[in-house]
Length: 166
Image 1 (cartoon, rainbow, N blue to C red):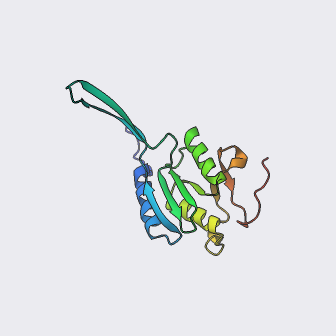
Image 2 (image 1 turned 90 degrees about the vertical axis):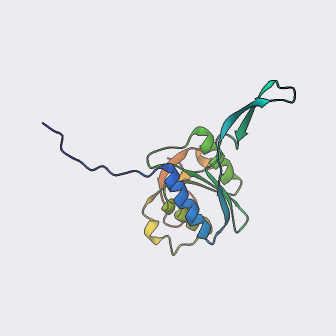
Image 3 (image 1 turned 135 degrees about the horizontal axis):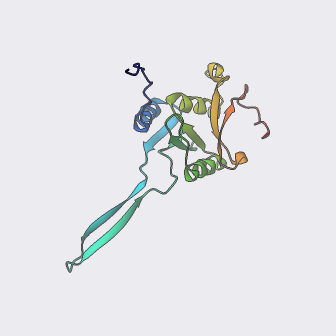
């Protein structure tokens, strides 16, 4: 007997989400600039002037650096860590986002363009565009939670102080 045919939803790749977010940020009036930053390392082999083999190790960025870095028009730093739905940031990534938030920048853990738009709206206090989003949930990375990423319900008033940890 054969298995019944079932359609499964196609989850977008992280690079596709990043590309969409970068295109959105390019036209977003509240963002001065935003760029993709690669993280990793590369070993280069070659020879020196005397013909002896040499090796160099080059590191790009640093462990935990966000996928997208930028600046808001107000001068604050912008860091966006892009993850596929269901994935979580590493400890280094969460720590970097917590540092950015503690220093007054905007740190976002984004799984879609909607997450970036909602975070910008909350950061800039634009309540008119928030009304449909108030009942949804958002992933928050704050120093009060020790840099841990937690999914919490949105507050009805974005300017209200955060609730105490339970």
